[in-house]
Amino acid sequence: MPILFSAVVCHKVVVEQFATCDGNFGEIVELVMRKIPERNDKMTYSFGRFLLHYINEDGSFYFCITDRSCQRSRAFLFLNEVKRQNERNILAKQMYRYNEDYGSVVIRSGELEEINSIGVESSESLLGETLILVENDQNLRYTVSMTFRILNIQL
Image (cartoon, rainbow, N blue to C red):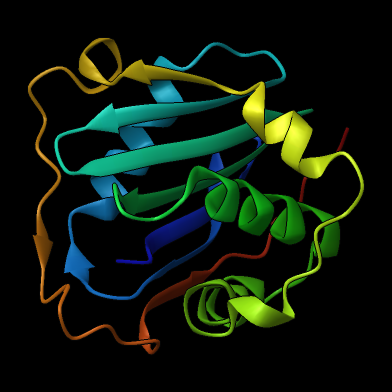
């Protein structure tokens, strides 16, 4: 099973999200954002049959949910690519690429070593009793749940 959901968050505001199937993903990303430390960090949390991966860096939060059969390296290569490209409509395009066309993925020097250093923890402290509800994950679609927000952030 591939990447099921991804989101990009800037200064605690979800600016883009994309899901390949139906689920309560918006609720999960909001909960994760509230619970993680406000520092630059990369982490994977396990939750039942799912893995939650994120990169939190300088006010930007890159997040995806995969099932356990999806390699962590694939998830973090995907998140690094989204972070690197930093453009609108990137999630659907890159999720398709990392789910279906993995042969075209370029692994940059040092990326796999970095991925191996990222910790893995149980999501109990992060999500508590919250469930991840996924529907129709056998019929993956690349046209569901795209949302965009235009931000006016002044630093």
